[in-house]
Amino acid sequence: MEFTAQEKYEFKRLLDDLRSKTGRGTELISLYIPPDKQISDVTAQLREEYGQAANIKSRVTRLSVQGALESAMSRLKLIPKPPANGVVIFIGNVDAGANRTELYSTAMEPPDPIITYRYHCDSQFLLGPLEEMLADKKTFGLIVLDRREAAIGVLRGKYVEPLKHLTSTVPGKQRKGGQSSHRFQQLRLIAIHDFYGRIGESANDAFLPIDAKDLQGILIGGPSPTKEEFMEGGFLHHELQRKVLGALDVSYTDESGLYELVDAAQEQLQDLEVTHDKIVMRRFMKELVSDKGLAAYGEAEVRHNLELGSVEVLLLSEDLRRTRSKIVCSNRSCDFTDSQTRSGAAAVLGNCPKCGSPLSVAEEEDLVSDLSKLADGCGAEVKIISSEFEEGQQLYKAFGGIAAILRYKTSHI
Image (spheres, rainbow, N blue to C red):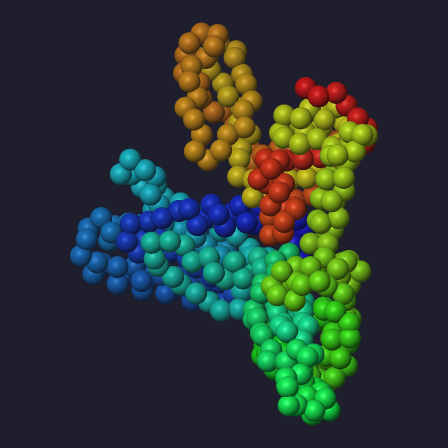
């Protein structure tokens, strides 16, 4: 399944929430049920596990595990048949702080079909299969080289992963004393050919294991004529040679050259999400220093412009982990309300400024969802930006993860 940016963000938030939950001992149950698995077979196994749990020596752990299994079996009664992609169930007593536990239970249809049935008990939920579904499988092979060194890596989704760095034994252009010019040039050409061969072997080892349908293409970067010599010299496996998209000029041939190659390959990568993210972030940076003033950042400024309807593109970091809360007074006769943005470790709310009673949270919504709704209301485009590239990191660290490109200039609040 291809995720939209919003779907990917929400799925990552779900995994973050599940990852944060812990149990005592092996009390948390993860069930991965493929679409062709009989629910009755799963229930039968859980009954068997329930019986075996009676042998657990610790009374607290025994009752906790058996309670979770009972809840799982009750949940399965509501699922006569697994949906098209199967179903995942997470259930168990999770740590609620202050030496307390509470029963947590959720079921979901994953974005991709479940292949293998899994029953897993541990102190944490089993999330590996879902994390693999989240990973962007579109992959590009990257090679940068000159006659001194080379680097090999892959671009997966928005993330550049360096894999190998090679150095050559090619001698410089100045021959040593006692060598004839012809002999020296022959030795140098042999060393260059051998180095290209080593690069090709390393690239084959890196790229051939990648599923052919996931490997979208291979990009080669470096100075001329080195990159053309390598590209046209038959040093890559024939299956990989067919996937070469082109050779591009880059200045660096170490790991930093891999990032430069991705930047240089805008045309070849135009359908890739990372390219769109970089283009819109560069546009924001340009507007930020322009006299036109068509840029805003920070939650207060951006929210102000969303309410005015002046936002054309809303930029949100996928690393934002905050909520928008409606705060009310605990005194029912008091009408005080407020809205606050809070992080996971939010400060104490304090007392009502009107009557002095304690304040409490009445409603909470994820901040990205809250701002996205405002953007939808004024017809703005929402871009959720990954922090797996430099401009995305800058959005999160320098601008608080919230920025906007405006339709027209507005006054600051």
